[in-house]
Length: 365
Image 1 (cartoon, one colour):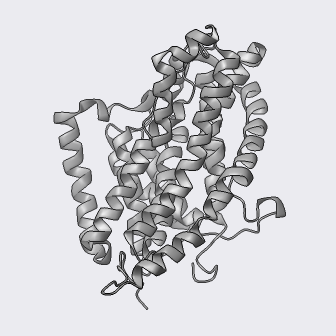
Image 2 (spheres, rainbow, N blue to C red):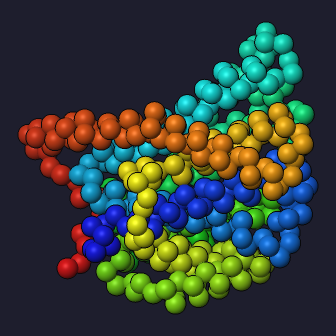
């Protein structure tokens, strides 16, 4: 991290690869339907798609912990999270509801726009997932418009939890944060089993949603302990193999979190050169957010392409173009709000009796 000025390019490649991996995984359900995806997830190949979303959350935890450390106020931290997440999410929701829906629905436009599903779909903008639009994609093997959005509530919870722990001082005491994270993993599993057993159900046999928060926390822990945790290719590859093997065991996903998180961060902390096209660009979030709807549209408009290989061949390039447009037209301009936010933060801290809030631990020198 020191050698790269805190911005290794490995995380950029890793996020891009994970996003494309999610699109490839969704090629099964969008081409053949839920039963085919569940059967694939029950096979020995399960660990391959199962590590994708937890790895995304680990990357987020590691990088967002750095954002927390650099933020002098909680308002700045949460504001940065908001401008990264909500603009593209809002655009995806609006395009799906106001363009794709009217073009592809089997209902009349009057019935479409008056249906409760149409109006509730806009709650996606706030991170409250609604997966269906009236009469849309009913002729495809799987009727959801945006099945990938099931992770959004967990992501928002991670930011709130981290911010709250930062205000309470837990991120300044990394041993305390480590203990709280371990306690959450154990007590959370017990509470979920007793109060909300549906949270332990896996997504088509992959990983349960509640484990995404511990994956995020593992990324934060690795950031907080970055001065002492060794970086090793050998350990990273061993952790990856061990973590994938644990996923094959009953409840093994609970034990796989930390080795998979370590492997993720090891690969992220590399610094390969970036081509000019990808410099100062991050298409990963756009690929993830827009991918499912693009795949569903392709499967409806081109029924002959309902095979996983055709799905990938058509949709990965298509969604990459959409993600590039999202980056340059929506996400990058939204991130430009960081400077006005910083000025507001300066004004706030310049008030009498105001002082910077140290939200995270200072790195050990």
